[in-house]
Image (cartoon, rainbow, N blue to C red; front, side, top):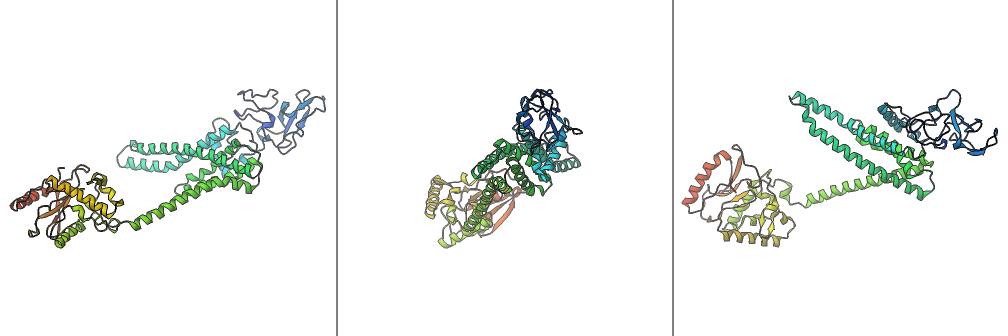
Length: 477
């Protein structure tokens, strides 16, 4: 028998406190190997051997056969039987609880190994509440160590890459921050999960019959079973089966803690994790179904290429051909099939749809509006443009320049629009970047930003000859 706090041998001690650390103890706190300990009368030193399944005396209160004094087992002094050590008298030697000073990692790994191959043995002999704190310590150590082992290969790989590329280990700082955050999240979430899990187990056991343990003993059972999570540290594959090993180990530790059947232990232990798993799978299936349905009802143009300039140009030219007039506003072209709100943006644009005003609405609201509501909003915006006297206006990343053109002005080189990212929301284009120009002859031209200024000058000369307003540089909002 040894102190559970400092591992000092508690043999031949009449006081009920450890002389090393001062922790109180009682012989009944320990589960001992039957016939391994001599219980000695505190008055005459008459020895008795514990014979029940916990190595205790039967009965615990009796009259000493030698001195005729009424004594209780917890009053007696203890010493190992001949040729035995105090540690050998304990029925099960949980490595974490009997570890000597300086053997933290060895005891942690041995406990994890036991959790994987003989989990029930970790619980026998520890039915009191004094080991709950140390069980929590074990669980927290497990989280930190497993997360560290999981991240270590990546840290080493990034370190080698950083050094080989001429950098320094300081480049690992972001990865280190992610590792610390992951550990903190893991600590909090695992502790909360374990507490709820233990409470659920005890509730189910109380509803289905009797049990010996308390919620605290259930927490100890789950904490020590968590050692099986060491399997999660296996690169790539561990995360798929490590948690399953913890569940399996927990069934055995709960069974041993509460002295119940394997069936009750399985039902009580697996109920809460199964509920969490079912909810997770349900949410995942719901998300997949929602995504598929959303994609199925999404306008066809949005499912393919919404940033191509050709559909917009074709629709603009076709409208002029059919109606012999260009639309009052370019948003009239939008049919939510071929032309959608994204059709007015360039690829990789940062321009948000909610920043594009259309009457009393913004362009992002068009997805939830009826056809009549969209028409009304476009007409309102067209009226605003007309009242302002603008002949050139922007919709998102597209600058429309067709206002004022007459159907009979069939000049191929006249521009109908320019595709230039809105400078309010996008970085300036580089000289070798390209922009798209839609022309009156239904063709598009990809021109470099470097050559655009001269082309704009030539275009404005052509427009001036036709009595049209010049086009301002689209780089300037």
